[in-house]
Amino acid sequence: MNFLRLISTFIKVNLQMSLAYRSEAVIEVLLDLTWLAWELLSLQIIFSNTVSLGGWGKGELIALLGVLMLVNTFLAMFIWPNTEKFNASIRDGSFDYVLLQPVNSMFLVTFSRITVWRIFDLLVSATLIIVGININGDVIAPLNIFIFILLAISGSLVIYSLWIVLIAFTFWFTKFDNNITILQALTDTGRYPATVYPWWLRVIVTFVIPIALATTIPVQALRGDLSTSQIFIFFGISFISLIIASQVWRVGVKRYSGASS
Amino acid sequence: MFLIFKRMWQVNWAEQWQYRANLFMYVLYWIVQPVIYIAVWTSIANAQGSVKGLSANDFVTYYMAMLIVDQVTSEIVVYNFAHKIQDGTLSGEIIRPIHPILTNALTNNIAFKALTTLVLLPVWVMLWLLYTPIFASTSWVNILLSIPTLIIGFFINFLLSSAIVCVAFWTQRVWALYRLYGIPVALFSGQFVPLQLMPKVIQDISVYLPFQLFKYFPTQLILGKLSGTQILQGYTMDIIWLFIAFVIFRWTWANGIKQFSAVGA
Image (spheres, rainbow over the protein chains, first blue to last red):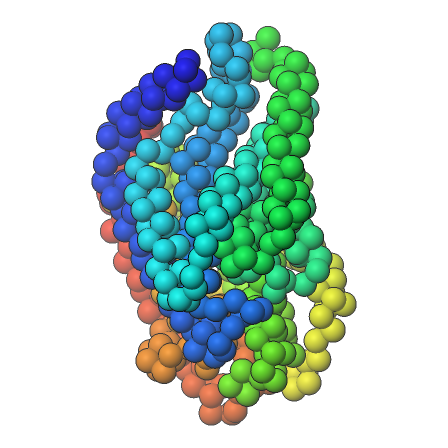
């Protein structure tokens, strides 16, 4: 309950902060839409030359684009702004104040910055997913939709865990402020089904920087490609990675010595 | 003048050398996109034999040649210069009797490239071993012919991007503008697919725009896909656009610098 109250306070504060930069938000949204038009055109170009990409149809790729946009929204709402704040707080020592507060530090580091207006992108991505499924004309069982949502969440949690581990490395190597570049570099791989990639890239995006867990895999569940045991393995992975991440964070925080002292 | 550039080079090389640990990250950025495109198009080409006459090997060679072209023609002026206008550090540079962008920012770009090339080369060789592409129609003549266009292409890209950076003299929104600039580049440069796979309208327009001059044209030239007239046409566009880019840059710089009030100074 306490956490929910805090989150709603954070949302309020961040909303007030972003109201100072309204035109920035409008410009960003317009830019996102322009780039989305390009993404759709590029899919059009691919599918004017083929009927399927690794067994996936155009509608499914549009849905996948929607899921990738969902992940990107999640990253842009929480991960990127909080990384910026976290790295700055390590550099100038203001992380001291995070530790002083009577709330879990991992929670504070995750939610203290929220780019609220990105909610608009959620609508766009939901539209893409629905339109994509309809173009494909698949009849999808309600159960698969439910599994799709759960897998998308659990995949995002894996990415989140990886992020916690990456920024926690800063406690060991203070000058590690491009800790998240590797994550940014690989998000693009979520645009196409991981099944078309060569094996080594597939291994990277599934196990090392698990973008595919939050993009390709949930859409595979929609298509009914996954067996029950696979689905449970993916839930397991997300559960275990969260535990590992919070442990790494705990050990890391103990190593923190403050920039000023 | 030579002495100035020599000194600039020493300073900027030393500056970039500090960040060598980040190099792998940058190179990762660059290779992810071509690797994805190679995967997508070879998968399609293999499934149906070819795509509009292009085989799987054509796509691999296209994106791998583009990787090298991009290494030469890309620029980082937005990253290393825009903030100087915004935070006022430019003041220290404009009192010197040399042009801050055409000397300092330029050598910084080149030092950055020189350093990243050291990492890109082994990665490129690795890709070559993985995909074993056959550069059948690439000859030494093509490679020699492509060198001037690569250099001109870099300068066109550098001057156009510098002109965008100069907009920072008027507004804070340079990054938004730079992201917007990415759209015509994506559409007309051939970085996504070889331009002959693009819709006819886009192909027709792209010939007259500068964007293919620093990606598609040098790439196709290296691959030996262009006829004599096409090469001549490309070089003509090169010279025209180099001139236009320089004029645009000169104008934005000359007018922008008058707006400069050195925030924080």
